[in-house]
Amino acid sequence: MGCGSCSTGGCTPGGCKSNGSCLTDGGCSKLDVYDWLADMDLPANFKPFNIVEVRFKGSRKEFYRNVDNIYFEAGELVAVETATGGYDIGHVSLTGELVRMQMKKRRTNEEKIELKIYRKASPTDVEKWKLAKETESVTMHKARTIAIELGLAMKLSDVDYQGDKSKATFYYTAEGRVDFRELIKRLAESFKIRIEMRQIGMRQEASRLGGIGSCGRELCCSTWLTDFKTVSTAAARYQNLSLNTLKLAGQCGKLKCCLNFELDSYMDALKHIPDNADRLKTIRGDARLQKTDIFKKIMWYVYPGEENTWIPLEIARVKEIQEMNRKGEKPEDLKDLAVEIAETKLVIKAFDYENVVGQDSLTRLDEKARKKKKNKPKSKNRNTAETTAPQKNVTKPQATANVDGKTKATPNAETPPKKRFNNRNKNRNKPPQAPPL
Image (cartoon, rainbow, N blue to C red; front, side, top):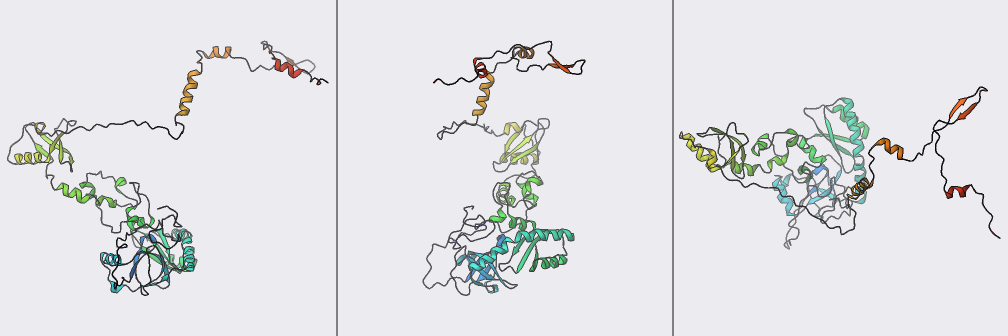
């Protein structure tokens, strides 16, 4: 991404024939699909699948029927039919047999697909589509202003213009039901187009807007994740994560979807961890569980009053002690059964890099400052420094008034020493001599 082949900063996908005229939000690689059947030779009498998947703004994908059997490649702009009339512009995201597999995954019946592809987008269609996309930000700002004036408890997150600029779909989020009839009326009067309001969830809003997650990468929901599963705090408890809402919440304000990615591995590992092992009874006393390393299969216990001394035990040992406690038996001390754990020391290596380019060191200014401080003489007393320094400033004579009312300058009691003029000052006072004949 970011190669500049797209006008919005995205890259041109393989086989894209739009010549850099694509305008998909977030780049052409958003929710992209790799066609692993592209290099395979088809049989001679093979009839290609006549349904094409088209991608629109905000990761929205729909299936359309290719009635005229036009050859399309991934990334091409096409004009498609809409259910409400008019036409829309989108990018071809998938063709061939992969469309059939995608429809089976989404449980879509081929017979129910009635919308069709009109043609490949012409330059006129593309220019009209660009003008429609450029007005989306202005429309969004004005729509939010109207919603605030009406006092509606809703948040307008995005607007999507149709390719022929005859319809605009507003996406909003709200906690409850909102009466937006007056809003639709005012928006239709302002923009002279058909208005459709569509409510979405918090996760869908984050998917449409996109962003950078706490991991430093783009949001999963806006790049590849399409199935939003419920995420509960139990997933964080099973993974021994702190229940901090600021760390567990994503950009949408809900729990992060990535909490479910490793949950199955933790659930498989937790099958070997014994239950009800919070306390182990010994002759020395009852030991309490402090920490459990799920994958290393080690549990740490502490005696009361010795909180700084953790005793690591293997899961097999813990199960044996539990069985002994059920029979009424107690081991003498857990330290005799503890497992030895090798201490890991952090070794920091200092690497010396050779300056082959000839660049200056970043600390060169600090070294110069240190040298200047060393060469500068230090004065023991402030008063002595002032007396030894040459007197540059001479005190001005004080003015006193005479009887006649005129002022007369009288010198101070301490007269400054006479100035010693060098030869250069003497030459300045001499008049210029005429050059010799």
